[in-house]
Image (tube, rainbow, N blue to C red; front, side, top):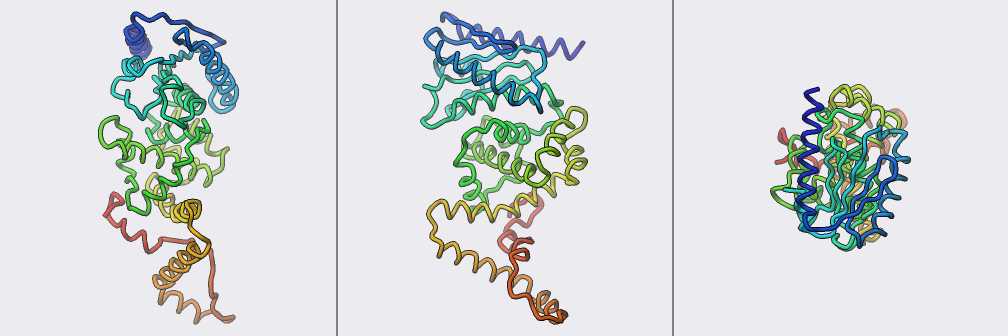
Length: 326
């Protein structure tokens, strides 16, 4: 009962905040099932489109993240000022939407307020995922980076720049250490770090899915209803957060190479990089490889892509302290 009182008490505060934000403005509402979309009268067509997007998403996500029986209330803000009153400290230019996940409340900017190219459909689905995750997990068990990573992957939000951003972070030795990642989502501080945190969360979540497969990934997510992420990761993937992070970071050289190719590197330049990496790898192995060659009856293996991919790699020696940064 205590938790219920807190939940509805917060919901009441949010409702009062919303009333203040809309003070003096006429509003309208469309509803379908659990979904309720509030909007300014001039945005009725947008509200209908939004309701359709959300309705399809609830059905699409239902197999893994059922919506339950409680309502989901969505507010489409027609001005930056209204959004800021709802969003509070997250009412920044780079933020297009927020979710009060336990209360089932979503607040988004209308598309005409978003920067050019920002994906309104993906943003709506993203915020819905936060609400559905809250209904299918225990909030205290889900790290912020996991919450954001799952929302980005599942919502299929368009984030073409994320791989390039991760590549730049990797090359510039700007990867956020694991023990700092959750704090990097704070609304205060460096805007670049805020964006880096989202890119890193997306990349790490994709790495987990690629490593254990979608079925076990969803088992991991659902496990966080009763156990912590650390326990769920060990149970479903046989990993600790540290080994997960280290394996992901070692995989980033491939992302960097691919990003370089997409950014305009020629095939010659790409091969030159690969040859340099192979040379460095060979130097690192040094005596160990010579000893192995001497023991082989059929002669040495001249080149192996598997050996090149084993890691750790020479350029990773830059990250040699406890928190992952020199």
